[in-house]
Image (cartoon, rainbow, N blue to C red; front, side, top):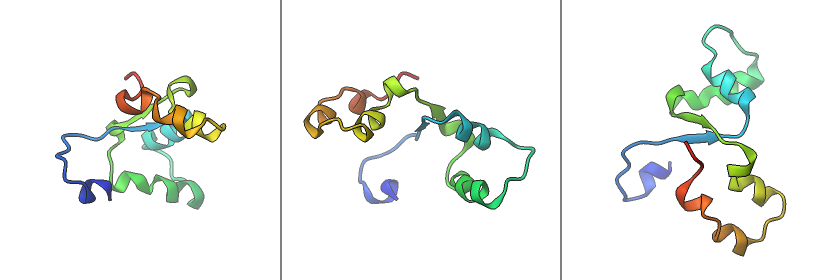
Length: 86
């Protein structure tokens, strides 16, 4: 949806997830999942497995925000503009 709404050209997309369990689900090609997990893996209908990366807690500004980080601190957090280390 964001790609359709913004006017900036986008060369590629990378998605960051802080759950190794979810990343294993995304990469699993052999097992069928129960409805709960299968519905969440529908993200692969609009993305590719190779686009997904792991982000640890210390590199994830969303973790800080969910733990009460102030808006001013979050806005000035360099992780928001440079992203986690690949």
